[in-house]
Length: 113
Image (cartoon, rainbow, N blue to C red; front, top):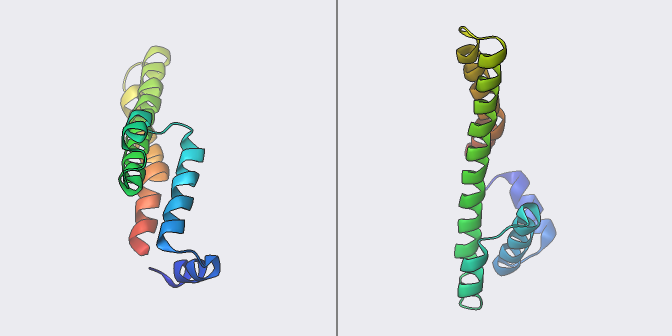
């Protein structure tokens, strides 16, 4: 952990179980969609940590699909409107832009901790 995260953890004065509860609530509030069937089937079986990891992985997969769709739409539009080499250029730039902002920056930040 970094000094900043240690300080934040100290200020919260929460146990690991309380932190897990808070993280679960935050993730569910962000998504408003949980792997509901998993949740219902595993409710009160001590699987909160598993459900949180699963929801996180599904959210990342969903964002990846959204990013691919976004790039695909831009490629299609540039092909219809501009044609030629434009779709390749637009696709490459959009992939770099979206991939950088949505995935590379958070991964770099995570690796810094």
